[in-house]
Length: 453
Image (cartoon, rainbow, N blue to C red):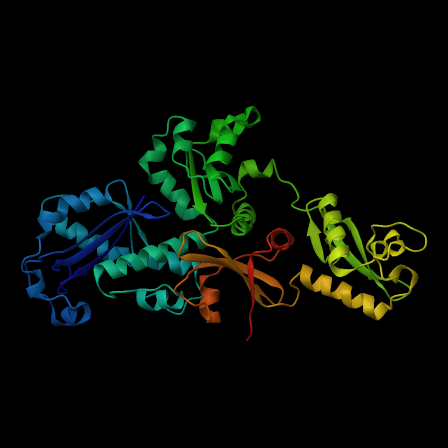
């Protein structure tokens, strides 16, 4: 659990500042579950430059509660939480100073979103909250007020969690959080999991990730792990389960693939399997016709698209024959010596016996190939997000998969620089290409937008 906060102060000499406003959002890694926002009477003068910056003046604070009146609520909101702030060293110092004046020692673990952003997004030009959120397309209201800056930090932190492929933030939180340390049985773990699409992480007693999986129903899938008699090794090692919602299966598949490669969990290695075993290739025969061939996947050869198994490849070809009026013989579905069966029933235009010209037939094959992959294309794949006001976006540049991210529906992703900033960068490997091709074949309703310079 995280307590994401922002504090406005009077300004002045080091360790003599007083709090004028505080906002705390309790964040469980997925959504805000509690909040506390209050002006605070600092019982001291506010520096003029601070008044100009925040708009908070002495008249506004005259009837506001003093710090000792809100101290108990701050303790409750931050108890058993990691404090997260943009430049957390400043906010944590101010809080400790105020509590020290009351004779109370305030100690919490902290995370700084400035330091996290520098580590996870080293390409950014500036790490000030205003410039960073603007570069990432994060909407901010009430800038330099505690609530506005704190909720912007929540959104920034959520983005950093998604971009953290090494899952270091989650693993550190698991080690620190008492609720994980107190988990006594697997059933209590399952009860806290949602029935949503996403990626889940199984942790050992040290917080280390030992297994990564994806599911359209995380709770059911983890329950299967915990009740399968063949999974005793896994069951004996699990101390906690965390998860990340993805909103759709494409992002879940891509995220699972990338994070398994990045983290190399011990129990994933034992169950590693190829995502695809067959691929579709093309070649030109002696008569000038482009033929298609379904064959075992070979990384040395350039494939049009890939399939999980031979049967799914054949189903693709049968549909392609119908949709593009192709010759079954020239796609490997008919082994006749002369004309194919479809020619005899007037459903093939005769490419198998050179009645249809190579030029005419090859245009249809080229259309199929263009529809089956995104080679040399610049496009984004838009799908469901993690919430109603959000969409996911998967970026393809010049036929290369760049990564995925999320954007608010109120925000138009027309700026390419902002689009690249919200993307979690990922490798364009054979597995990610297969995942995207396969998903687009099965989900025709997904929106694809071609990008122009």
